[in-house]
Amino acid sequence: MKPIFLIGFMGSGKTTIGTELAQILSCTYKDTDHIVEINQGCAIASIFAHEGEQAFRDYETYALKQTIDAQIISTGGGIIERSENRRFMKNNGIVIYLQTHFEDINMRLQQDPTRPLWNHNDINDKKKLFERRLPIYEACADHIVDTHQRSIEEIVKHIKENILMHNHNK
Image (cartoon, rainbow, N blue to C red; front, side, top):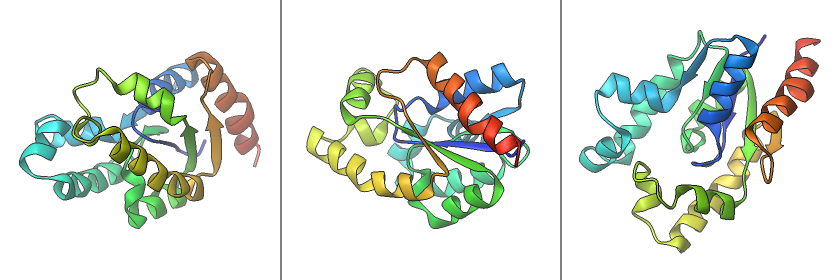
């Protein structure tokens, strides 16, 4: 099986779906945000606060390259900001975009203190960031999975039955 890279805006469910998918398929799993936190020895919010977004993006690119031995990889919402990251994912696996409505993300992240790009912006800035990234996610994706009003189980089942089985036979 080719590695699966899950992309999407923050709060789209990449970590939750990735963990569940890896468990159901008995696959190895890595999360780029988790790798960054382990490598740097601190939370992402702390990196943003003390070193800035550019430093975080550098750490994120390095973390992405450390996923080469995993089968399911959850990525940070902004990983698609760098063309080298998009190329890496396209060249090394199947890219699945978890397409999530802005309203769903806003509801999920309202009480989440760990999201620096979410917590430090007003609703208009959040919406602009979301809209700016949409075409990048779509262009990068091999497959788009709409997550709106679908349970974790439904999304995982859809990926397993409609994407992985199809690609496994190629």
